Length: 231
Image 1 (cartoon, rainbow, N blue to C red):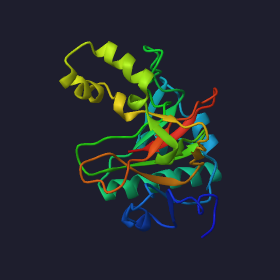
Image 2 (cartoon, helix red, strand yellow; image 1 turned 90 degrees about the horizontal axis):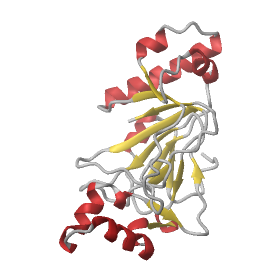
Image 3 (cartoon, rainbow, N blue to C red; image 1 turned 90 degrees about the vertical axis):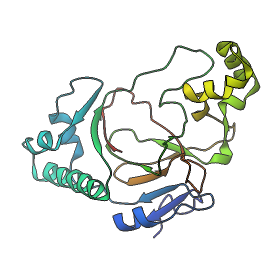
Image 4 (cartoon, rainbow, N blue to C red; image 1 turned 30 degrees about the horizontal axis):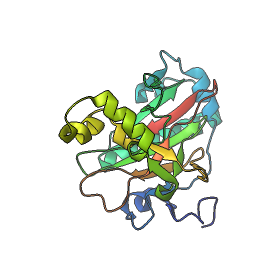
């Protein structure tokens, strides 16, 4: 199978949900894509759902209540199938209509919101699954194209000033406030956009993980709503 992701060592490409969940992360590969053609009119769903706040969670009942065209029904079926597949696998998928995420602008030298390149962490063995059905899609970067922000000298010095506590507790402070999860792209970094309609599985930082966690970020929405399934 050849597609835009096939030549990227970071990404494994599969053609079914079974392959998506059973392919093992290894080496540089810490992202797996179930590559699919877009099916149906997801814009119709977005236009018929009421945005109640910046992030509105959509239930299965909400979806089923929509009066849709044939193409809208196709799109709804795709979403419902994905939710069922993930639920049967043991995940807890959430379908969200997004205007924007909350911004972290408290500190001018480091950001810890999802628009910053970051990794996910879990105390248990798990992965992040996501699919953008409509709107801007997330980006990922290979681990050799980023630098952990807490290792950049000028940022680290400012974090030490912010901590203002015993040196022995500094690393715990970085973890407690999630500073250690965020990364700075190197000057020649080339982000890969995850595209619309594909279901992705991204490696998470946890004790049993055999590969480096996948560095990713949410896109800037530019006043366009996003329809995103994530767990």
